[in-house]
Length: 180
Image 1 (cartoon, rainbow, N blue to C red):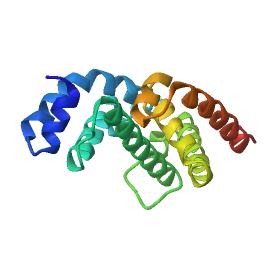
Image 2 (cartoon, rainbow, N blue to C red; image 1 turned 90 degrees about the horizontal axis):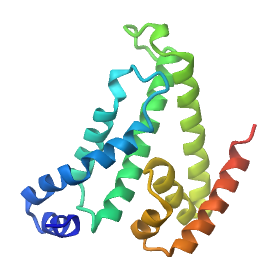
Image 3 (cartoon, rainbow, N blue to C red; image 1 turned 90 degrees about the vertical axis):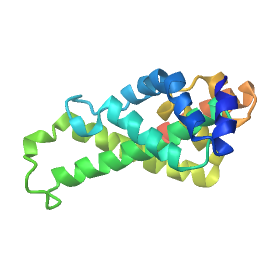
């Protein structure tokens, strides 16, 4: 059975269908999640497996995606939320948010810089989404979801040419917003 058929069965209430999708997409979700690990790579609270599992749990609690593309677009959005939440948490710890049992050296400078970069990108994406929501969704799929241009086009129901054009415009807009 194909992913789209399993997702349709899951939407119709077949819980077993949802669990059969996992092995079909797990490796690719891990590849995507690996891109978003903390810079130092040693923090066990946001490792690749944890990010994939938390993403999958959140997807399982919502409405089943329509197809493979929709699944990965949704995963991109959820991973973005998880990574940004994690980045904000790490910066709060570094600032001394009342968490007494975390030594300052546990939050390294590389991790703080990466957290700030993710938060700045998220802020810029929110700004972009207010005026050009399609561009923001394309960035989510491409950057946070690791989707190719064609996969992004399929996931969002757009033509490849539109994705290519909007991806270029979005990158330029974001670069302008993120420039020092």
